[in-house]
Image 1: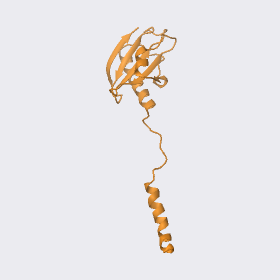
Image 2: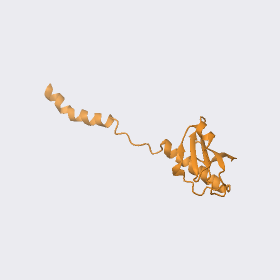
Image 3: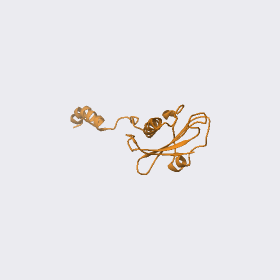
Image 4: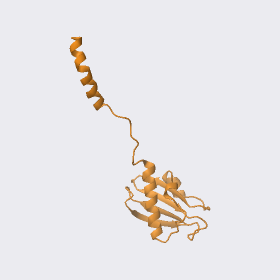
Length: 126
């Protein structure tokens, strides 16, 4: 009997290895990547609206909670970008231009659609 089972062991091993989960692959569409994409869409939309985004880089966006994003950032020498995922799955992207820009410290609150396929609203504050 032992000999009969021994013949099937390689087959069982091959079949079970095909069913076992492989090593976890990194998610290509991680939250940070999606937030960066939302920031990029917001910067593009703002540049079309004559908001000075010079020196702003989507890759430097900081992911925060919505309340922190709505509070904004203080005016500074560099552009600042905050990105928050809202409960309705849209993105809130807050862009504060630098003091040296033509928008001189203005802040834009941009609502980006869930898959970063466009912008649904833009508000400006100082």
